[in-house]
Length: 235
Image (cartoon, rainbow, N blue to C red; front, side, top):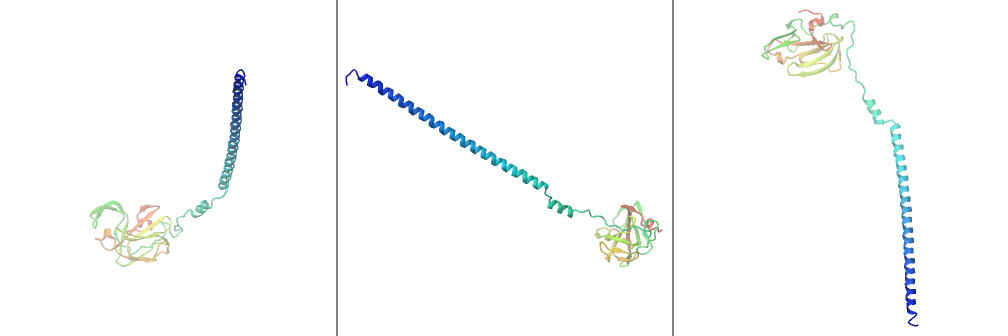
């Protein structure tokens, strides 16, 4: 080769190098374009799949919620069955147990030691003044205490001031409290008849300094009344 031909060879080699670089660059562009397209398709497919899964889950959740809402609740039904109104049992009124009009027996003797008053009176045992909304009937300790009329025993209890008490509903909204008993022959829920022995007399703690007596209280419709008036008796 002559010295004249050498520059031409250099030009050919340079052109060849440029062409190779172009081919390589084009290949890289095509390769990365293909990979990007594939990733986009995969991502789109994954997104669609996840969206479909979410929609399916949402449909299932809504369906289950609707089913639970429409189904009757056993727990609510059970509570409704157990939660029943408990009516108060009372003594029925008739011609023989009408306050102020019907016949009533004395709970013990007819002798009255202390009468009914809403005024303040001296209490010798407590050393103070207080109202005496009851009638104290004379009765020996251990003496018989009887029901003034037919009735329903509402309660048997013990009080620090009044001692052992039997509370009886005698009908017509008349409720009597027999206070200061020693022994009791009846229980809550028992029905008694007029004159039936309900217990024996003990003592009334807050009136212990007085003579032996039955402390007898009555209410009509929840309001305190004079027992003698309610029974149609006089002192």
